[in-house]
Image (cartoon, helix red, strand yellow):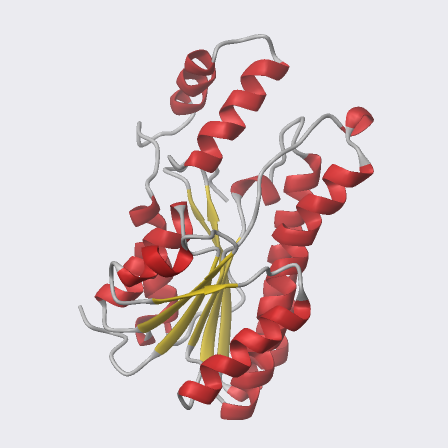
Length: 253
């Protein structure tokens, strides 16, 4: 499929994991893709599939605004934003430090807000576009030890719903995806933390978490990318304000 020929997309946090899978999928379907990431190798990674890589810290609203201004200056429209940038980490609430809580919020919620706000301003003016925010199943059902991460991801869903209502009259659609256990470096690190917190091995945690997935496998970035591409395309022209689980049946709601 070539659903995005002539379209311009920005993917935050697109140098690794889920974001990289999404960026590759959009580029493969014809989009001109800009990857925004703090990864020092972002430009090199983007160049391998014809994308533009830009160093951008989404916790800095001025940097995000400048990124969108640069995209618009080199083209005429911003057709798609995928607000994906986020970080992991966590602790029990009683042991959760202010520093860790704020660091998680700054990237995983504030960063999504900064990107969505910049895109919303552009898309409202041009009266069209699509935004897809990356939340998590933990934003709906948060396990012990993940309060900060879950709160940030729940905030992403709330932001998605409000934006969908605000931008709908301008023809802009806003949706979210909620990945489950997706095999990325971020997920592997999270399993390591959960194992350490419960005095188990990572292998035992992997086995328990896999057993809860009806489809019997962990997800991949490509699993997320396919749904994001659908939401971004005209195939989803009557779909907005939704948060879609992509989790192999882990949560059925």
